[in-house]
Length: 246
Image (cartoon, rainbow, N blue to C red; front, side, top):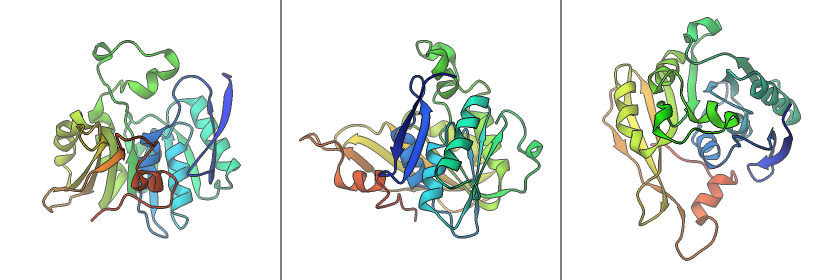
């Protein structure tokens, strides 16, 4: 097995073992976890959970909910199980080894109340310099973004929520792919600086929802004057605040 490092997320509340090289969890996973608002007794699925960074942070934030992670890479799924045990979350967090390119029905599970995902950012290998083998699965969606959105829609009950973080320039694609079966969209842009274009968007949809789209206030991560994060962003990343939905 490749070298493994042990890190902490959510201001030290979650210990995370992950590969020392290759894809490592970062800001996107932290923001996705902060966007989870599952209530007590609800069931949440994350598609493509990797070593479990977003999944376990969401479980730590939402202690009354139950979680399942789907991951096709056997080594990453094994790490996610180890991490669930390491954090005393095995009773509430289940890891399933499966591919989102396959129908959700093959899992044999009832639809969830909510689904989360940080899908790979590219579905055309020619669109970027070839990533290292360790990163390819996290960067390239072999079955395309449509497979991920289709899986997520099938994974939730009617009235259930689907929350994704993705590149801002894929917003139109996300809305188009989800619109056939979901609606009531809420979109929160994520800007690196107040005067810079958004690089990420967090999109929330409701299965069979009919409410008008809402563009929510942006989250700005940094100030030009210096400092690692703005106070609002720092509070969210440390688990002292959540990304709220209307």
